[in-house]
Length: 287
Image 1 (cartoon, rainbow, N blue to C red):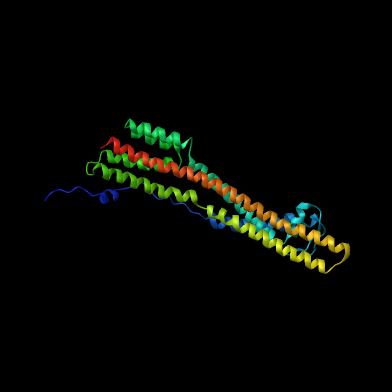
Image 2 (spheres, rainbow, N blue to C red; image 1 turned 60 degrees about the vertical axis):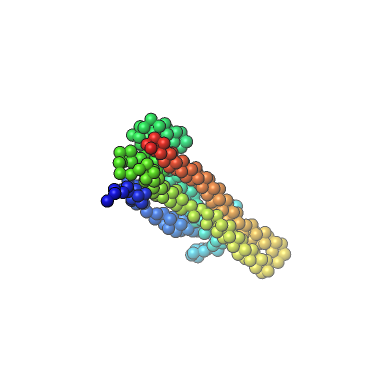
């Protein structure tokens, strides 16, 4: 019986050095809850401190009816119960901005991605795979991690005599794809919170404004003369704090979301280029 070569499927089933990263994501559900609670505490005990009002409500409770804020910042308290939700949303945005900033900065690695790929290409052209792997260790980012996984398979395929060149290239490509599949979710994780809050914060701000306007016009109907005009102007000003908080939170979310997605696109492009570099180098040097 004639001897048959292993197929491309067999090459695809070769052992892999890529191991799943076991990392929890408890921050995704703990942070929003803690931020909402913190938002209420800030609204109730810092902004709503009785000392900040000329006519504080002595009964206290969940939502004391303080009157006569002594400053513009204290007027935010009278914006209503939507205000602590918006403060919590702002704190949530800041939390995930810091978390994503640290994660994506780490994933970007050290130095220029383009320069790193050029160094790897130079070492591969000189058939110095170990030096290329050493460059990956120096890079310390997602591109370096993917490249290192591919280079290990690259090195293994050099001494492999069971597969032809095309099958070896497919094995390297599969290794790169598996490493990429582990890196990309880590980069995109939690961005959904920024995109969601960008839409929801504006709606909550408008809801708080509508509720505040209803209260203002209700107070207008219960009074008359100059006092009516004064209460109306105060009610409108207090209601607009909701709009300001909602729009401000939404703006921060949109800006940071776009910044992060741009950085992720740059890293993704570097990962794609690294995979192309490995397969093209092997195909040209080890025919």
